[in-house]
Length: 323
Image 1 (cartoon, rainbow, N blue to C red):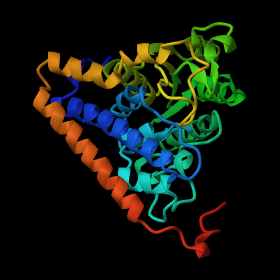
Image 2: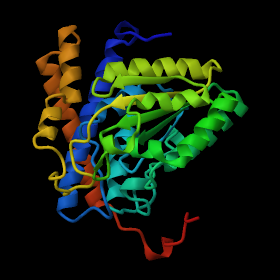
Image 3: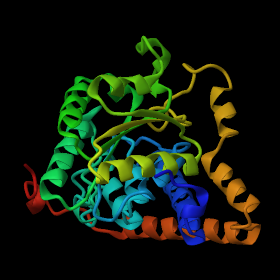
Image 4: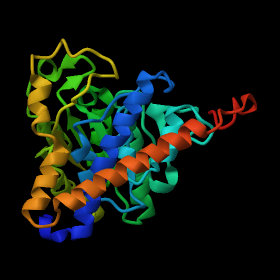
């Protein structure tokens, strides 16, 4: 069943917009803390890709699962992660999701179905496929949404996992965020056939291309794949055309990109796009948009205060929860 705008209530649409604003504010504050030297380890910004996480997670139930990437703050927030606990984890604090031991790239919340961000390229693909197998065995109607970038689509784990998922008709949605770069390398030189949706064909499930800067288009595509997976129809590959506005990590120069490329994509800002769409349909006005922006900004500022005031882990906890 294809979901249309009318299948989402005004509250659901505003919540999607709010989550995108929350992700943007979280990333901007995380970038500031990183530049101040307060964040432990590398940090990768999700700015410009908010529509993928928000649109996809709006199609999931609370008991569904996601796996994420090294650029995973947006996925975690879209699935319901707590900004304060996430920010504490970035700062290596005892109050963080992983008690300060995971950092930016390894946030997980099993109660919310967030099976973890992952510092290994494509590392979440096998985890998602295994989780989808358990979903099928349990028969509870759960699905798994697996986020990864274009670089991961060339990893062997995708092909092995897709083969298994196709054979066993597992309820997993492989969602490729085609953000145009694998670390510093433009993806154009790494795909003999640039229509990445064809990667699904050998494994017997559909591949779908979608505008990754249009949250409603992402939602429609993911909802259709989720409905199909829940009914036993098996996996799907969705390729979301989007763009990584920032460098690979905070502070990376953009000198390897064509001049003004990022600025052109800024004109396609996914938050502005959804705001315009909702205003056109009378579901959002300037006052409400300003209120949402102020509320999400305050929520993140409160999260930063919580993280900064949280204690560091005690040395006696060094080996606890380490496997």
